[in-house]
Length: 240
Image (cartoon, rainbow, N blue to C red):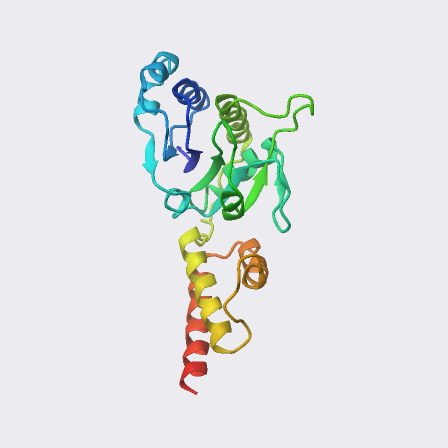
């Protein structure tokens, strides 16, 4: 069974990295990946390195934004060494295991930054959790294709070790788009009630209020219930 595990490469610059990454993914039984605003134009060098993985290279999805690339995902983990309050920092092994586990509920994704500067602050904030390879401090950065191989290998090992699926299906988890709708409706309701005013950049009231809901891994039905409750409350606040 092919699991809905997606690798997302932000602004990849080097065609050789794309070819080597395609080969690494096929080595580990993965094929779903998306390039967000790729800067590598000539894919000739990529084809030379994508030995027997040309189909993976040609099958890469394209997206203009990270939002578009993860819109249907129920869990998104970013590869970054930064520490962000409220986000777990997971080892590559833990990421592989959780990707395989969560993929039973819907698409999941690992996000890799570009070769020069990695993920932006906004992209890090967009991810649900973070992960980094525990490299030696004397050489902390890892080549993009090597990073893809490391995480693909951990997914492969977790897949091989996974127990048979439970007899009863797991509830469908809320997608990132559905969670965004709940967050937006929560914001509108809190503003209608006078609790929340328009926030200035750097103020994190809404984000901090919504963080426990995001961490709770809402199911699709739970997200819809939250939306219904918030819509009803907002209607009463604005009509009164």
